[in-house]
Image (cartoon, rainbow, N blue to C red; front, top):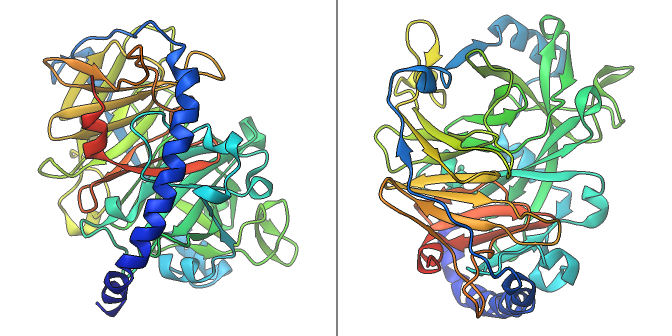
Length: 421
């Protein structure tokens, strides 16, 4: 309570900083509007089509749960040392994000044209060179009061390389003070050899949801589950991942997250493209979209209920066979979906641009109609970021977080609704 009281006393100073930052964001959006307005043809899509809860379409969306044996995790913890929690990682932050004024114009060009971001930050180029920005989730997903302990936290996923040479990591960002965001890295890993070692999660990360004590991460072959109370310290700073001479390494990161389980789509080798949390349902649910290229056919959207069992906190509800069955499924004509969000019967889909220097489209769809954000003198629908990233919404703050390129940004969901044509 003392921490939050201090933040309320700082509101006046922050309001001034927010006004200055908002001015910079508005200038960025105005400069970018010219390129967006060059797209004079509006994209077209249609309302969502509900799919039957049973049948081939929904059967292929069942997730099979696989848990890493407790003995494996305990063996790894015994060798590496007692696991730590999120607060310990935040207290060890060794990097800072730049606010909008300190971000180069080239980085700011990745921001949405409309609606404009209310807050935006950029990652240091040297710290992210060679890495691709991926998913975002926040403590607004983790807990309905928007905090983890006394901290507001953002988790930002990044990927490097591909195939067996690939790596994935997460930045733990302390966002308690919006004027000063600090962070440190944790490598995502998978235990092997019964907990005697671990390997890198060699897959791009396009979606993450931090719910209660678990972190769900998309991968090429499914969803991986991480326990936020089982974060391990790396003891050797090297480019290796796993056991090395003298201790444990995490590809230069200070911490490593070993997976505690996974979910695999039945009969498929690919996992969802994007995921997010929906707190407007009862129980809370995980929504997902599949990977369909921009020139592909139709995209399926679906949701799973989270378990109400305290012993399974943060995990999906499963049947006796360990399968998570979709509670709803839809089909949309929108393709190239990079971010998905569902709230109060509305679905928000972030589609990537058709060209490297273009802008994507943000749609709001339900079973009756579809609308896209509008910008420019010609009412173009190409108003979103070029490479659409995941979307994370916190009802407590009313903000949607996302990232594109080197930019991490937030904007009110209400402003997205106002921007829909």
